[in-house]
Structure formats: C-alpha cells, structure tokens
Image (cartoon, protein in one colour):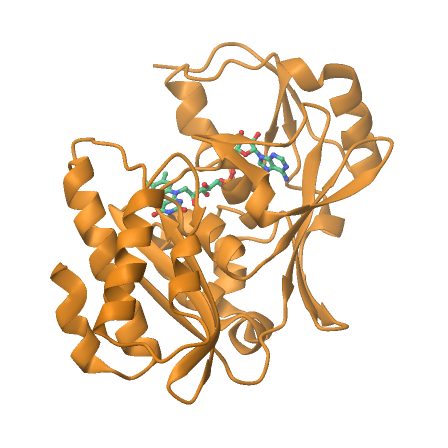
Length: 293
Ligand SMILES: Cc1cc2nc3c(=O)[nH]c(=O)nc-3n(C[C@H](O)[C@H](O)[C@H](O)COP(=O)(O)OP(=O)(O)OC[C@H]3O[C@@H](n4cnc5c(N)ncnc54)[C@H](O)[C@@H]3O)c2cc1C
C-alpha cells in the first residue's frame, strides 16, 4: 500500500514548527526518524493532511551534561545515544538498553523524541525514562512544560502531548555515585520488540536497597513503575521479601495476550525478571531460585 496524499513541509526553526502545529496540529504529524511513522502511513494506519519534517531542526539535536542533568535533544538519533560517552558515563542504563532497540539500520534513523512520542508499550526507552525519573520537555507556540516520564504515557501509542505540542528534549538525572542498574528483556530474536522487559535503577547499601525503581515494559498499556519495589527497599532481602514483592507486582500487571505470548506467560516472565534483577543487583544468586515463584 501507499500513503494517502499529504502536504509535506520542512520548517527550519523550532518557532516555525510550533506555529505550524498551532495552525494545523489536529491534522498534522511530525516526521522525525520516520521509522514508526512511515510504516504507519504506508499501511494507512495514519493519514495526516500535513507532514511536518523536523529532521532539520539542529537545535533539537545533541547530548549535554550540566548541573547534574543529562539533556538529550528530541531528534538525537538512537545511534548517537548508543555511541555517546556522556550517556555511557551518566546514564549507563540508557546505553545498555539502546543496544536492544531494533537493528542498526533503524537506530541510524530513529530518534529518541520519536520513540518516546510513539509510546509503544513494548519499547525499551519509555521504561528506562520511568526508571531513571526523567523529565520530558514539551513545547507549543506559547509555553514550555516539563512532564515527569511517569506521567507522560497514557496508553498504547498515547501520551499527554496535545496536538499543538512537540517534544524538544529529555532530561535525565545524572547517575549518583553508587547508583547501579539492571536491564534485561525477553524477545524472540535480538532487535525484536520485547515480550517482557525490565529496566531498573537502584542504590545498594550493604545487603539492602536504599532505592529501587523498577520500569517494566510490555506488561500493560504503558511502561510500569512498579510499586512492588517498596517491598524491597530499606530491609534485608530474603526469599520471603522477594515473594512478597512478586505478589505485589502480580497485582500491578495488566499484560496483553498476542501472538508472542499469553498474559499468563507475561506474568510469569515479569516475576522471573524481578527475581533476576534483585539477585543481580544484590549479588545474591540464591535469590534467583525464587524466579519461578
Ligand atoms: C523493524 C523495526 C523494529 C523496531 N524495533 C524496535 C524496538 O525493538 N524497540 C523500540 O523501542 N523501537 C523499535 N522500533 C521503532 C524505532 O525505535 C523508531 O525509530 C521509534 O519508535 C520512532 O522514532 P522515529 O524518530 O523514527 O519517529 P517517527 O517514526 O518519525 O515518529 C513516530 C511518532 O512520534 C511522533 N513524533 C516524532 N517526533 C516527535 C516529537 N519531537 N514530538 C512529538 N511527537 C513526535 C510522530 O508524529 C509519530 O507519531 C522498530 C522499528 C522498526 C521499523
């Protein structure tokens, strides 16, 4: 199939883009890396009247660190993030997870802003942003607003962005000394979307977690910051504590059934990932045996 007819425009400034969105936002789509939008257009899952190409907005490209914040421009490509020493040093979870996003050809074109705005619940980056307590910066012609990642995703392919808004950047707190992370996803083949995945960030003090943020993905209609972490913070973690956390997690999951896995299988995988994560971060291989609980 081919895309429906549309008007193509390539603004050269952010202000021009925001003016276009103010005038045509309801009937327009922003084109960033095109790796999700182009297939959707060609399958006629999306048929905008206007395609606004933001690929030339160099103000929205780049990675910087300042005042304890790693700032990544919205049109920074996946490959740039993967190769960035600023990202590797200050948000190593992102670097590790990005290696699991699609394949090199797609990472060469796909952008962080496009990935987050697309809001696929099986996508790695949204869960990382939730785990890292990131802030997404959105702008329209009148104002800028800063949206915690935990509030940004509202459903399958849905976010709080209004039709006249665009993502301009993502801000991630620089990893503290002692902060550790965990990332793992189950998928059929390397580069596929996850069947179930977990991106976690933690501070470990001795035999316990001083902090633990668990960002699960592909377990519901949006990334999940699991409250189950509360069962594990500030106390020695033994098999009983882990079982309590797995039970709490169970109540938070709302997995879909699809051709890849049943909801039951996804629940099992999420519980297993929690055990593996805890065992890895606390260096307690004995806890892995709880993975089938
Ligand atoms: C074969 C294949 C495998 C893939 N595997 C994975 C995977 O394993 N994990 C994964 O996470 N992704 C995967 N992807 C998707 C890929 O990461 C995309 O690049 C990404 O989801 C969208 O980024 P983009 O820059 O290409 O956005 P586009 O396709 O250009 O846009 C996507 C959506 O976001 C909107 N948008 C774009 N930029 C902005 C902005 N700045 N502000 C507001 N809205 C905006 C667009 O209007 C559109 O609705 C895969 C894609 C393909 C084709």
